[in-house]
Image (cartoon, rainbow, N blue to C red; front, top):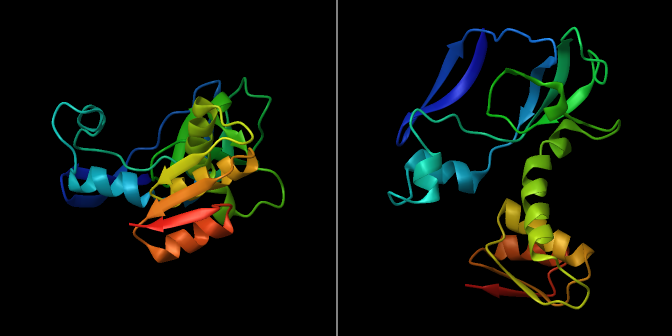
Length: 191
């Protein structure tokens, strides 16, 4: 059996057991080691904090399976899989569950020496990176990052790494602003 988290309805969470998925010839089975929770995204989905007709309303349908940043170990590979082997550590864009069966091409190898706790951040780092890529930051650009929760923290770091100056962080939390300054924000605004 596979254990997973479900939001069956607004403001309700349950842990449920479901049958193990069958492995296809190009699939891998991954046993979860860590699954990162996004406090912003999953809080919005859990509490139903969105208006009808929005992108959120189209995405969050109850029952809703939360989670999208999971890391684990490959425990089984399909007959045609040669690129990944049992024992490999991988990252998946999947929900909170004890295991997943996915096409091997969706798995991202985790380099040796990277701890589970660090690897689990890959999903949020990817989201922030795609934002930086879409904006096409260039050396000398200016940026204001509104909200420096986990993804905002990553966005500060991508902007800084790409030569943006100034990088301005805006958030009501002094603790988050201190972290943002440590990650490259050249100015912070507490509001």
